[in-house]
Length: 246
Image 1 (cartoon, rainbow, N blue to C red):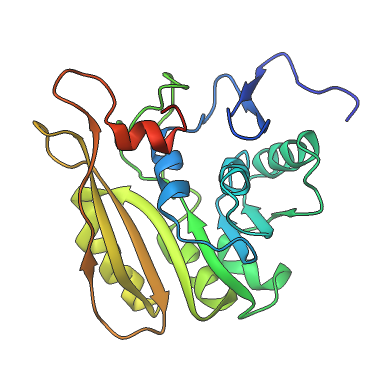
Image 2 (cartoon, rainbow, N blue to C red; image 1 turned 90 degrees about the vertical axis):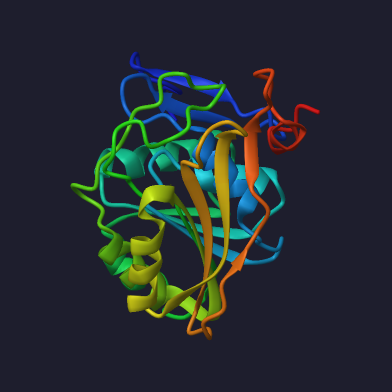
């Protein structure tokens, strides 16, 4: 790269194996929901993973830092997002492991062999302001909308590229949990595990982490709730471990 960052960009230290991330100052900056999804996704070290709606490419980096996955396909419909994801792969010298494509999620199988991916991860646009938990590292996370990516496109693309019994991982506002699970089923992605995320013991859950499996039989398993803050306002021990700050 001739120039590492532009005037409207910053480089964040992910505090994860020396990995770094270029981010735009005034556009989407990753939040705690992205961190939680990377932690939740049950991906083996040798598996192939696709990230649909990759944005700046944060999820592949977080998964690599956690020794999850070997080869990643990062897809985004926005040219500027795909370009930034490529630059982040270059910055971290990971272009051999992260392949970026600028296309709509529904067309993923044009660039990725059908039925070849072990797992798909997706932090889709919520379409609701204030739906995402703000990361301690990024206090100005910007809410996103569903004007470009739609769940139909994402689920359609995921089904085409996933292997039989391949897994799909996502995070979404808990208020829409039932509707999103039904939509997953419409695309033969059967919800199998879910975990509710609570800001604290005194507040209602606001996010849900979901694992769905391609062409699986119905059987839904709730996992123990995930608490973010203790009653004293400090992060719970589990969240500290998620952020590797224990």
